[in-house]
Image 1 (spheres, rainbow, N blue to C red):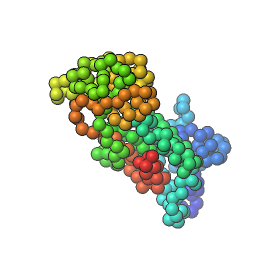
Image 2: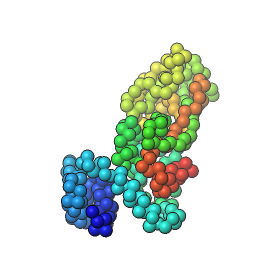
Image 3: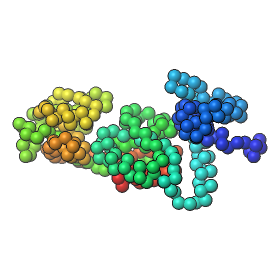
Image 4: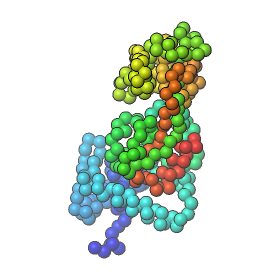
Length: 298
């Protein structure tokens, strides 16, 4: 095989199709026509002796051969970028890339506004995709490039090939409406357990982290309503006598935004960490490293 006979630009097209799962989107990203993408794909199919991508209802899906090939292509393209940059300092203003962030309401309430504002100023050509934190245990989404970074209380950093960095560590607080008939200046343990509670869960669970803490003490609270969003919860709190237990920064943020009161939980359970997690495939990428630092400082 003569490497000089190979067109490395085909690998750029391959990576764009693999990440976008669409020939038209890959073309738009590379600023070439869809027919040019199709032609490049035909050449790659002949080169590698595999279909690489097959059509489905949403666009295209990679073959097993393509899935195995993608991490190698990504690593090669990163090395070429680093080589041609000549060791020059990373300049976010010149970057034209997509970044997919999986995060829940915690990030939306505490950091999203500041992060987006700085990203728009410092890296105006970066496309940010925010997706729900659901199915975080499907770790292959990180390997496939469907998720670049997740912000969660779930610790997967012990898994091989993953990294993490703690963003914050919050005590559990309690939110209630102003002029709540049972919650005054201070919330006692007895009052807390007598109240009706609202729980936030992506999976419709009636139990949360507070219930895990209460169980060894032989205590139990009454959860009367479950919703999947802290924003929905805040609106419900304003018009009911329900209370919400959540990380301190969430309670304080909702209190400012929705005119609620926030109280320390009348049990000492210790602070709970919230962390960024990412896969080894992006660990050494200057762009991803810069994004992680931006989130930390936002």
